[in-house]
Amino acid sequence: MTFMGLPPEEVFKRITNLRNDYGDRVVITAFRRHILHTYKEEDIEIILSHSRNIKKGIAYRFMEPWLGTGLLISTGNKWHRRRKILTPAFHFDILKSFLKVFEEQSQSLVEALRQLNKEGTEVLDVIPFISDHMLYTICETAMGIKLDADKTETKVEYKKAILDIGAMVMERLTTFYLHSDFLFNLHPLGRRFAKSLAKVHSFADNVIMERKKAYDSGAVLNADNGEGKRRLALLDLLLESERKGEIDLEGIREEVNTFMFEGHDTTAIALSFGLMLLADHEEVQERIFEECKDIFSDSSHSISMSDLGEMKYLEAVIKEILRLYPSVPFIGREIVEDFMLGDIKVKKGSEVVVHIYDVQRRPELYPEPEAFKPERFLEADSRHSYAYVPFSAGPRNCIG
Image (cartoon, rainbow, N blue to C red; front, side, top):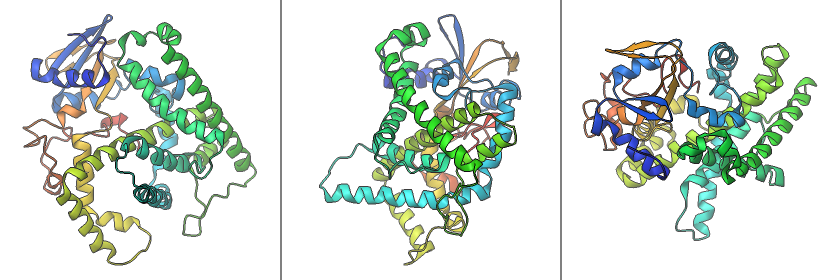
């Protein structure tokens, strides 16, 4: 089987059909690389729960010029140190302080849709529209700046560059001859990538240094979060770690760039697929609407964490969206220590790909697997704990 010359969507189809043709374990050999593809929940548990085989697959190195070796890409002691530094940034109280940002940006998105409707826009390309608004949200929570409120050329260029880079990484990933750094750097795609990368790094570096000056002088006075408290960005928490000697400025740059990517891209993809599914299932839309009416009645008060906790059906809808369309459909690992996968030995130096997309569509785990049925997640869950892993699992699960 060859993937050469195929567009990304065709590569995806072929990879997801491997299980139908060859079973739950498939080995692909490419340029002397041996890549084991796994589709079964028991195998996935062994792989993702392994305490030492946490090194990301070779494909992740295509993002290294952009993200450095931040939390997404690093491994070993560096990954453990960064995880320890960043975990407090996802404490419940920190996330609670971001709720006002999420609400403001959600209202902005709705208002933008209303404006398009007034202008008579009948067809909207959802993915770039949603990506823009998710980028605004993560920019404010990660770096403490309002990207949507400032139309200066540098901010517009930054927004375009960060969206373009993600697309270029995917194009490289699915164009196998561009896996060579030498060929990629000579190729027009590689040259475009370098230009976009320079803009992204320059912008992020300037924001970090400006924020550092303000932080060092004690002048970090973000907008009030609605409760009389200052609103801290992820960058502020990283600067506090830098003050303690736990991370340097290059490390801060790595983590800011990492969270700018991870925080907007995955969320935008999930929301885009979610809108598609809701458009196709008006009865689900109606049930979400009724749940919101029961919680808010006719009140226009700001949303609270307790309000979110009452949205049981909406939570089930989100889970079902991520079951059908996980934002990261595959996870790659480069094996650094031999281990047994059932009756086979997986050797150091090989690669393993975990098929999240496929395991979440196994009919023995999810009856009518192609159907959009949020009620699956309202029922008692007796499935294998690794049958639903849209945020990965084990020691290297998604920090968010």
